Length: 385
Image 1 (cartoon, rainbow, N blue to C red):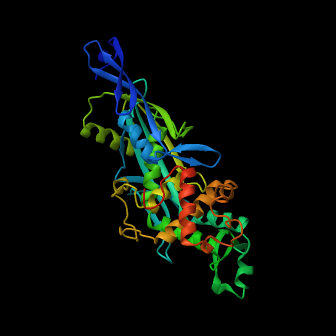
Image 2 (image 1 turned 30 degrees about the vertical axis):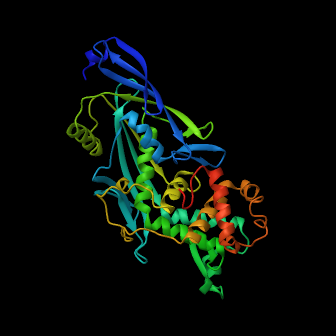
Image 3 (image 1 turned 120 degrees about the horizontal axis):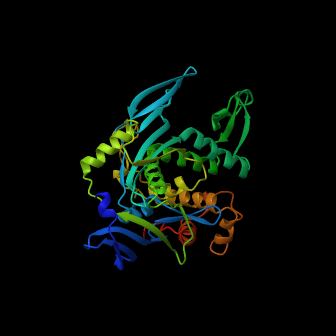
């Protein structure tokens, strides 16, 4: 599409696209030029999810729905330039995308870095690319998760020095998580809350690539000018989001070339580049929405780029028992709902505020609790989802 065509007088009309109303912009010849659509996102379809503070965020599934109008091309470059620090000296080299760092002793994933690019036209019709570089530090996330338990649950663990931990007489029951030089968290592995922390950590280890790639893709679309929306306030479980889409005549080869140039640090003429570097933050809402999908194994396998290193956990399906899945879900709801948790479950499970751990609940009580919580969380936990 050339500039002369864009400057032709436009004809505007209203039409229906799926279940959303759109405004069409056409040339005088009747050719479709642009779409300005109001797209409804639904809590029940996990297109939006509640986050701490009473707000709602758009999930990766929601952005995929918005992108049906925006027409953004999302690509993971096969390789990226990565900077390391070795003995205090920065070292730059080309690595696979995603790039994974493993712990030399355990072989577990320490960090995973993913780069994702989203190419599309902005609301004014100019080309724009968002480049998202996401880093997921699993050890740091484990430390923050463990610290939240130590602060809020008695006899769960203690913050102490390395020397104090080494002098303990009951170390066989404890796990020491390093938090800062000389200090860490001694966690009692017999405690129910610590076991939940470890279960969550092992799950994140297994699905680290899928978690990081999904959040990276979501962020790249979230920051693109054609959408540029992250927090919404639904009415009746549905949030309306305005999205812009343009017609263009670039083929797959041209788009791939443009993306490749950006990945190598060469910005094409008349293209706006928006670069963002971020980390997966504990309690941000991003990872909890992704983990809800992981607990039922519903994340699209295609979101994981296949150009980086292989994961030590393979690709077999994670199938927790129904009771374990319910316990995991209740624990996540407890963390996210805070004081509202007991208010919601009190009328359903009368002894919820007297038990020492969720493991004390019967299977029937767990099922009732999960069904009630799912109404407030906006998801569909359980067999009937």
